[in-house]
Length: 362
Image 1 (cartoon, rainbow, N blue to C red):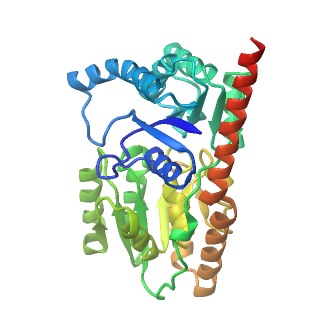
Image 2: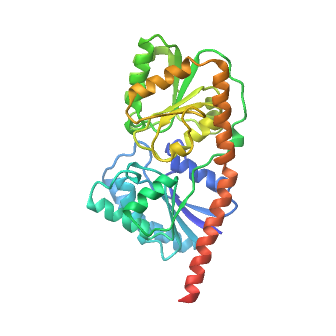
C-alpha cells in the first residue's frame, strides 16, 4: 500500500506538533510505503506575503506530488482550525480522484460550532470529499455528525510506542511537574502560572519543568521564572531519548488546555509513569479516568487545577504508585502503536477495496 500523507514538518526542531509526531510514528512503525507532503506552518513562521504565496501554490504542488508518486490512497491530516480547514479543503479538491482519508486531530471547532458560514462551508466540503473521516473519540464523531450528517466516520484514538518508556523508579521527595508541548495560550499557560503562584503562596514545594516552543514561549518562561525562581526550568525542544529521560524524571504531567484533541504528550507521559492533570476536553476523557489514572479539570478553572495539584502533592507514596501503575497500564493496553498501525492498515485496505469495487460497477 502506497500512501501520500500530509502534516506539518516532521523535524521537531522546526515544529512542535502533535500531528507531526503522530505522522512520524505512523511512517516509522507501519509496513506500507508513505510519501510525506508538508502542509502547515513551522513554529514562529510569520503569515507574510511569502507565506501567502506559498499557500496559493500548495494545492498545485499537492496534485503534482500525487501524479508523480501515484499513491493508492491520500491521507490528509487536519485540525479543526479555520486556516487548516480552508487549506485542506483545497488540497482535497486537488487530490486527483484518489481515495481520501481526512483525519481530524482535534482543534477548537471539533466540539464548538463553526464561527462563520465560510468556515462551515470549508469544513463541510473537506469532510464530504473523504472516503472515510477519522476522529479521535466517539464524542467527537457524534458532534461532527450532528453538524455534517451522513459521513462515514471511524474512531481511531492516537497511540504511542509504549515500549520506548520503560518502568523507572522515582526517588521519593520533591515532586517535579512537567509540561511538554506547544507554548501557546490555548494550552492553558496562564492557568499554569496562576496555579503555581497560589501553591507557592500556600507553602507547597515542587519543581516545574517545561519543554517545547511556540509563540508564547518568552512570556510564559518569564512569568514562571518570576513565580518559581530556580525551581522552574525551561528545557527547550526534546525528542527521542532526551524526551524519554525528561518524562522519566517527572511526576505530574500538567496540560489544562482550553480545547484539545488527544495529545500525544499526554500518552507519552502516562506511558512513562507521570500522573496527568488535564482538561476534560476532546478525547481526553476517553483516556484519563478522574481519580484512577489521573485527574480531569475544567478548562480555565484555576481553583480545580490548584485543588488537584494540592491533593497529589500531599499524597503518600502508596497512592502515587497506584496512579502511576494505572497510567502506564492504560496506555500499554489501549493506546499502543502496534495496535494502531494494524487498525490503520485495515482501514486503508477497506477504503481501497471499496473504491475499486465502485469503479468496476461504473
